[in-house]
Image (cartoon, rainbow, N blue to C red; front, side, top):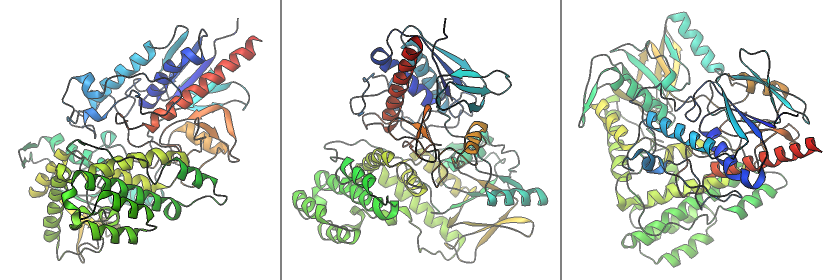
Amino acid sequence: MSPSPSLVIVGAGPRATGLIERIAANAPELYAGSDLDIHLVDPHPPGAGRIWRQAQSPLLWMNSHAEDVTMFTDETVAMDGPVRPGPTLHEWAGIDGSTFAGRRVQGAYLGWVHEQAVAALPPGITVHHHPRRAVRVSGPRGGRQQVWLEGLTEPLTADLVVLALGHLDAEPDDEQRELAAYARTHGLTHLPPDFTADSDLSGLRPGEPVLVRGFGLAFVDLMVLLTEGRGGRHEGDTYVPSGREPVLYVGSRRGVPYHSKIGYGLDGERPPLPRFFGPPEIEELLARPGGFEFRRDVWPLVEKELGFAHYHRLFTAHPERTTVAWTDFEEKYAATTGPEERAALAAAAVPEPADRLDLAALDRPLQGVRYAGHAELQDGLRQYIEGDLTRRHDPGHSADLAVFLGLLSVYGQLVRLGDVGTSWHGFFNYMASGPPGPRLRQMLALSRAGLLRFVGADMAVHAEDGVFRASSPTVPGFHVEARALVEARLPEPTVARARDPLLRALHAEGMGETPDGLLRVDPVDGRILDPAGRPHPRRFALGPHTEVRAPGAFTRPRTGGPAFRQNDATARAALTLLRELGLDAAA
């Protein structure tokens, strides 16, 4: 009797759970009546995985409203498989939809979704969890694969393998190696890019200055763990210190925190997206014989799309702040060919500059700005953050929410283009994936308490004279010295520098990689490509280490969900291949 066909999924976090949910949804059509063994390989619990595991600080929150987090498909997802609806996080947990739930709550939700997905599998399909790391995949292109597990001498045999590895640790780049060596030589503390919840923060001493490079979500986690996590507390707009906190000097390329999460819903008409960046534009870009370049060929379309979303909402929801009819503006806007034309059109039809969309100014608010001294910068940044909080919680500026929806729409189209470089992902996260408003209010309280100090834009760090020294052109002539430096950002998801031994082995094999070091995959079904662009018949990959990335960690309901589309396509391709392999074996 031949063994049942087997599918090995490396990784057991949210992406693997989403794939199993799609296998359960599609199996009645594509794999009815046949046995299948699914092997999940991950040392962390299925569903939550490493990032959302229960064993982390209860102080750490999700970055999305509970009503904006779902693991279930709806009718807005363009996929071939059936829709299987289910509860959002807030519906499942019975909490207010505007809550920013703790990560432990999300981990429990993910564990429940995993259990539901497994329970929905038809008879004969069985899931086995192996709480170990996968270290290597071997096997011929046309034959069964072997997945080798840490600590075992015999591999798992797989007809198909899916890598759903999620976010991974990375080896340091040249700069980080030099900084680490300098820290060892001089008895300093240097924390490289890492997942903040896993970082050893014990070397950051109370009362001492700590340089922090990075002002995104990793910084927010660091800020929380070094303040509330050390016994301090927030009382209204005031922070009451415990005396165990270090003093954080934070800067970044932009020099400001990510924009606050928007604190209201969208009433009335949504912008009809996509409008200027949809399937026809993607097809045209993919058909270009010489390929395309993001900044030259893609960004102008993105910019026009986001502007359309903004002005559609402004003209339809707040017409009193415009001087022409929307139909007239839309016609002229569609005819524009560049940002200068669009800026002139907006200036003539929208009297208030604050109602016009200026993506460059939003992206680099400190560009060219200079402060006379460090204290003046603190006042200026607090005013900037307070202004951002006010605007992002004022429905009178609902065009900002329309731009957010535009960003989601754009991301859904960009996944078809593959690796578009790092600038887009950074811009998207800064604009659309910023911290909850309460975290920015805590940031202001810490600033007023003197425990958080802003350095400025284009923060430079030099290792010299036995210390780390930081400066910024935002405050000419100012610098700060410290014996500790934290790189508050996630490791880059490159295959070559991944610490994961399986990905390193694939890199050594010479699998296809993008110029930015991501694993090349077929955008249709996620099959891994070789350098010649040939899809591997038995290996797939999903997630941030591939060139087909999805926006955010989770999907917002009723937004089309690119990750859902990818999961569905991969599940259907895998089931079809497994069925064919089973038929061949039976013949």
